[in-house]
Image 1 (cartoon, rainbow, N blue to C red):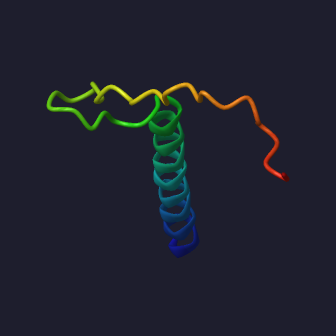
Image 2 (tube, helix red, strand yellow):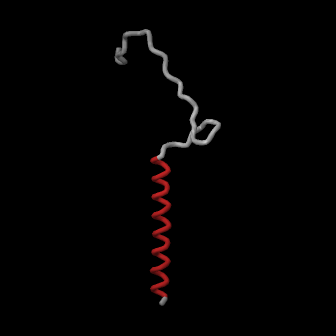
Length: 60
């Protein structure tokens, strides 16, 4: 009897842990939560200004 209760507790624990891991993976797959004023929206990202230099070799 004690063995069946221990196995049941282990199974429930494993199921809860698996659901937590799966939920975390799903949340991360959706992308980051926005940082704007409304949930799910993010502030626009700044775009770099084009360089006027034609020298693009960083080793010079």
